[in-house]
Length: 173
Image 1 (cartoon, rainbow, N blue to C red):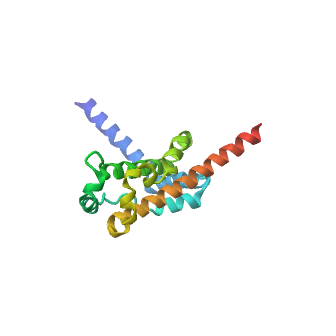
Image 2: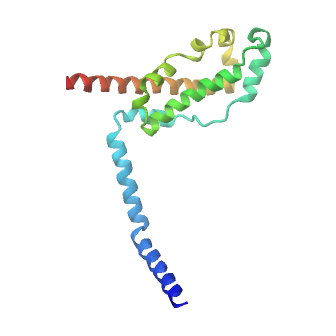
Image 3: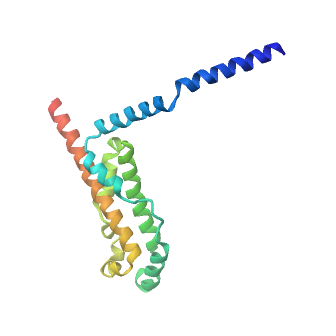
């Protein structure tokens, strides 16, 4: 019994010591240093700042997509799924942008560049008839413009990364 009480007291003392060490000031100092190191190590902060401003977490505009599919049923055919293709395209862009934000794009540059180089209409030529009237579908068009901006900013960032790594390699030679 006495041994258990001593163990409890030791645990409480250990917790008290940890509370003193891990005060908010210390954790905020660590966080501040961590963020400062990230900012200093970031090669293209202005492009990254623009990417971070984009609201890429909006819900998928299913109502607008349904209207498009309903209006263009005859032109799309049964084998094409505009909703799936657009969702896949946007999620690919979001994946690349997520890697850029997390700083994990360097080993993925070529694949990311291939994803971002073509627009949706270049990937899916069967939907060219929709492109002309696309502005009429407000919520889908608005979301489309956000992802196009993300695609272009991502492509700019990747191109700059690629040029930077090329310059580093050529200087080493």
